[in-house]
Structures are given as C-alpha cells and as structure tokens.
Image (tube, rainbow, N blue to C red; front, side, top):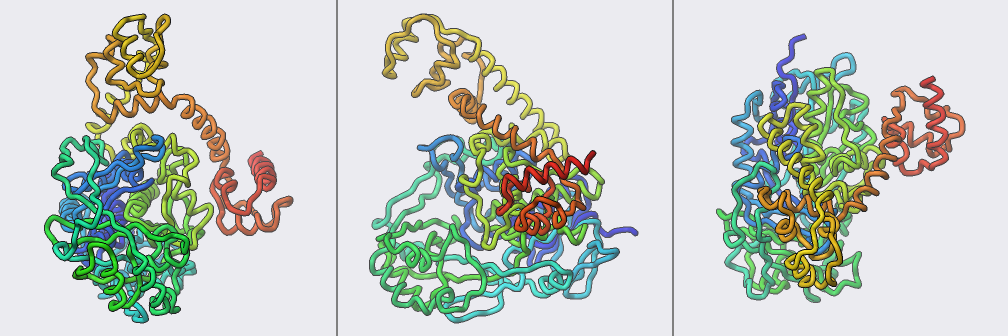
Length: 624
C-alpha cells in the first residue's frame, strides 16, 4: 500500500526534533506532529543544555550528525566547562540557553528542513494492520499512514499539574495535555506507568538583591558542543549566574507546611526523579544538611525572568511566597511564575528493545520521557537513535546499537532495556564504567564514522574529521619516536617545573606525561611539531591520550572483553522459561526483558554469572 510518509514523529520536544531531523536528513519523507508549533523545541524547565554526562551526550549527538549542539552554540547566555579540577573522564560542558532564542531557531530549522513536514494536531490513536503500526489518527479525525511511527510525547500524556492540593489537567508551560493516546496504547497491551517531575519559580530580575549572592561566571576559552562551531561568545559578553543558599527559616517554613505540598499531602501518584528532587524532599531526606545551594540563572536576554534552580516544589502558592522571601537577596522578590509538579504517563522499559522499537508492535518506536528518562539531552539522544533506527528498519538495513564503550547514549539505552527504571532516569558519569573512553574531547573519534556511514554526516564534515584524525595520529607518532637531547633550554624548562637536572635524552611522549608539562611548551623542543597548527580542542585531546595512555589501554582491554559477550547474539525465540539450569529469577527476568545479546543479559539485575555460563552453553548448542 502507498504510505503518506516514511516516518511520522509525534511530539515536537527535544526527542521529537532529533528524531524528525535524523529521519529527514537521511532522506526519508517525515511528518512531525506537534500540539502547538510555537512550542516546538520549548524548554519548560531550566533553559540549559549539557551538564554532568549530559554535555557529553550533546557532543555525541553532534558527532553522529544531530542538531542540538549546533543550535545550542549559536546564542547561549553562558558556557561553562564543569569538573575541570577532576579527571578528563568527567569533564563536560553546560550552557545556559536563551529560552526565547533556542526554540525559535529550532523551529526555523524544522520548518525549512527538506523532507520534513510540520503540522499541528493531537494524536489520539494509532492505525494498526497485521499487528503492525502503520500510522496515526488525530483528534479531528485526520489519518496519516507511515512505514514507521515514533512517539516522543514528553511529559504531556494524560498530564496533570499539581500545586498544593490542587490538581488540574494540563501540560508544561500552560500548554494543553495529550489526551487519548495513553489509553489507546494500554488497549494495545503496552504497559503504562506514572511518573512525576517539577519546575521551580521564575523571579522578576529587578526584584532580586544580587549583592547577597555569589557571582558565577562562564569559563574562558573557545568552548562549543558542535565540532563545526567556529564563532564563540567571549566570556566577558556572557551573562552571569549567581549562587545562594537556603536558610534555617526556609527549612522551618517547609517543615511547618509539609502536609500542604502535593507530594506529602498524598496527591502525587507518580514517582519523581531521584537526582533532581523537590526542595521539600531534599529537606526531609537530608535533615543533616544545614543548607542547600540554589542558583539564580537568567532565562533570556529578552525577558526579565530569573530561574530559581534547585527550588522546585509542589507547595501552595502562598507557602511558595514565604519560602522564596526567606532566601538571601529574595526578601522582596516578585514571583513571575509559581512552581508546580507535573504527572504524566510513560511506557515501561521492558516494552521496547535496544533500537527503541516496541517489541509487541513492529513499526512503533518511542523516545524521550515516554521511555522513562528525564532531561533534554537524554531525550535528544534517544530521539536521534529512534529516528536513525526507524529509517534503517524501513530500508531493511542493520540497526544501529551503540555499545557501552562507544557512547553515553549507548550506556543510557542499555541501562533502560537491561535494568528498567521505576523513576525518571538520569544519566550520570558514574553509570559509565568506561567513562575514560567516553570523554568530552573524543566524541567525534568515537562516532563520526558511524554518522557518515548512515548518511547523517556530510562528506565535507567527514573530510574535516579525517584530517583531524590524521593530524592526531601524526603527532602521536612523532611524540613516541622523537628524543629530546640534553639541551640547556630544555633542562631549564624542566627545572622550572620542579624536576631535577636532565640526564641524557628523553622521549617526547614520556616528557609530556610528566605533571605540569603541556603540549604548547613541549613543541618548542620538537622541531617536527613546531609548525603544525592545531586548535585548542585537538591539543587537549592529544594531551589526554598521551598522559592517560596506560589507563586508556586498560579500559580498552576491559571493553574488548565485554564486546565478546555483546557479539554473542541470543535468538529472538529463545525459551528462557524452559532453559535447564537457569535460576527461577533469571528465567523470569530474561523472559520479560528478552535481551539481544549475552552481554546485555549479563547486565540484567538478578542474573548471576552462573546463569550467564549456562545461557552461553545453551545458545552455542542452539547455534550448532
């Protein structure tokens, strides 16, 4: 049958945008359906991109050919490199975005994108044929057919807003909720569950006394998410953020009114995010903490709104007034927008596979917060992968499944499908056992070849990557072969860093491994490198590769061991329930999750090494 579109994407948030861009850029005719075109790319919570682990995800999206990093680099308010005092495995970017400018630019990109059609509407049901999803039905009765459908409904499905003991049907930022689709999914046998998140108050800028706060500035240097970015905003032209702390009075007000909050008053059914709790939850759970830090962050150059980061709550409005006015510098603050909690429907992780396709319904993919995640970056990463895999599937090509040693996106998807989640999942660097391999600086080295192979990375962009890769390989080769002789200027350099007198020649790479030695100083003594022009990010990558060589090699060996297990495929129809030798818990969990590989099976909670040994034996017997 003829289809209206190759791919339909439902929802215009960060997941929906990346899914639609990926599909369209790969040459597939794509329809993006949004409740409100003016809200496409909206940032209903903190207008920031990046952060711990998340900043690396944005780099990975860019390395594969996605859009988030490119738009985030255009007109940010502030750019910071986090964790600079720690190892390279946890360093990452975070940019305060312009709440008005970022979605505007995303909308412009979507509306002008070849192969992409954007329409308003509310999807209430799916078109099914031969137990496959082949399109969508809108509330107004319109129908559109497609070869693949991707749901990226964010926090809108059957969403309700909670303030105190008040609960109303509604979506984030005053938008209407998505009604009807969730019951339709449940009728298809898809397991739905309830999650919760929230957002803090917005404060009128000129009602804040910033003299009582600590100023937080951006990081100097040419920082960017996208490898294509050439224009940078000088740190002196960036907007400042500010740090304040809760007071004993703040804590007393919250504890005195605790039962009036939606969470502690019994109004909340959904489970909230563990790593981004409400302020009342922080004070109850961490009673030993005398204070909690809060950040005052600008939302836009075009508004006077300040985001009160860390102060999300579901308290009644009059209690929020008391709470805000108890904070230093906010004694006379004017609240432009009160905090609220929001509950919404999501799909259990065991319902979808590593390609993000619903197992029971071929042709139906999901991405973003409907998967049980939190955060714009996680959503964008999932959307990109759903878009890629939907197009690969309709073209009968091998799906793209990223390993845990290849990307944080791979870690996230593997965590979800292997372990599931009963709360909004958040990426953290501690979740990545190979974080030294998954660094901020080397996302292009890990993923650009894949991006070019699937058709998302242009030939021009790929050629630029190849040149960078060749330059790095050339420099590493020279460093590992050039001996610096016993020269007075070289001796003086090392002595100035606190090292003893040089005895004999030194291999350049070994010198660079010494603490305090940097590439720019070292090349003065290595003639073959002195005329080679490299940008700051390439130099940083070379230094990390040389200085951490031993640790990186060890991590690669461990990753190779895991890859051997991930290369052992499990047949789709494998009978776990009747597999002799497997523990009962392992049988039940493996049958529910149905992992694709032995490696994935080994990461399912409740499955022990002895179970894996038996599983390997049975799989190999089946192959024979």
